[in-house]
Length: 489
Ligand SMILES: *[C@@H]1O[C@H](CO)[C@@H](O)[C@H](O)[C@H]1NC(C)=O
Ligand SMILES: *[C@@H]1O[C@H](CO)[C@@H](O)[C@H](O)[C@H]1NC(C)=O
Ligand SMILES: *[C@@H]1O[C@H](CO)[C@@H](O)[C@H](O)[C@H]1NC(C)=O
Ligand SMILES: *[C@@H]1O[C@H](CO)[C@@H](O)[C@H](O)[C@H]1NC(C)=O
Ligand SMILES: [Fe+2]
Image: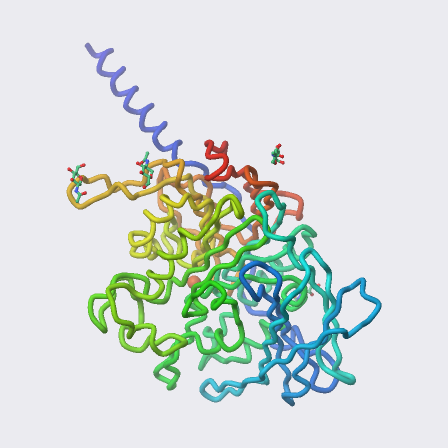
């Protein structure tokens, strides 16, 4: 009798332990403490030469990768507003020219330099180009390589970073990524400069950030996602236009995917289809002109870049309608890998920002599972976490099935807001580790997604304290459309 009872208790204990172990790995790595303080304002001084172009960055300029948007700032004069470019193997330098239309913006008591964006079109695939900006002593030369033509088995390697900021830790993350020779483009999941950390959102810190990252952003495209630190919404100092500095400085090819806002858009690159969403713009059902399900922060003010985002007639918000139309357009025979970037994670077992992504998850998760999204990349939480392939779409208010379940059609959710910004590490994980969480660690780092062909991609997460070849977490990912097998953690 007593023996039977203890057997039952032992069994229950064992089952419990098994249940907890199912939750995956919380790394016991203890990172060295490091100061989360910003690098000095003169850590990345302007380049020498009169009116020298600075803060140079490039991104894809069309839907398929034959165009590049080149952006830069000139501090003193708006001219020259030209970019000259040529194929690296061409004997004729400066063969082609494109013009920018320089703009400036004011933010409280800050006035920006002249901000230039020039789109260069009709490039050859898989080709190295030189480009040159400025004139006289301020002439600067850079280069980039266009992606291969879009196709199902085209290998391509992305770096992944988020929530970078400009601390010494940010510098370590960034340098760690740059020293990895494999990254061909960066998927950036939002929160760039953290200028809003300063009094009056001192926009000089947008300039210092632009100079800090230039040694990568001038040479390979960074695919931008807007985070909450891009809002710069400060009505107390008269700044009521959300995303004003960000949208002046970082242009994206949103019109090429028929989006009405630079905050959500898509591109194709090599074998990937990348969808960028905005966690901080309305994405839900529109109930009346000033109440929108899923809208955060700006019921009345968020008029978006076209000043009419919230005023459209109809039941749904523009982001909702765009995504609904976008997902069926993805042709997995052409671009097998479907990747979504957004800022606020849907699956996060950290006490920081816990469940903040929930309303967007409720709106869009069934679509992601139905369309077999491979990977969802998010930032916002300043640590690293990788989920199992789970969905939580079966839940309804009466059935009580409110826990995520494994689903082979579901994405892997990766939170990589661990760039190292001034807010420090997020190290309060919820215990026990939930079953949806496969690996989590409170360290700074970056990731590499190495796509091999239509069936296989290798993902690695590199924490700052390891040397570059070391991967703290890694996984062979199998494509959900072509190879929907279970992955081994
Ligand atoms: C950033 O990191 C690089 C490479 O480690 C180093 O040379 C440079 O001094 C760092 N910059 C600052 C401001 O710490
Ligand atoms: C909710 O789930 C219950 C139990 O599975 C099912 O009977 C019911 O039809 C569901 N309701 C909706 C609205 O799907
Ligand atoms: C996985 O998700 C799909 C699409 O929502 C659904 O049809 C299917 O029943 C789910 N599978 C499981 C095991 O929940
Ligand atoms: C796809 O890549 C994986 C990993 O490199 C390899 O094992 C597999 O054979 C490749 N598939 C094809 C069809 O080449
Ligand atoms: Fe954030």
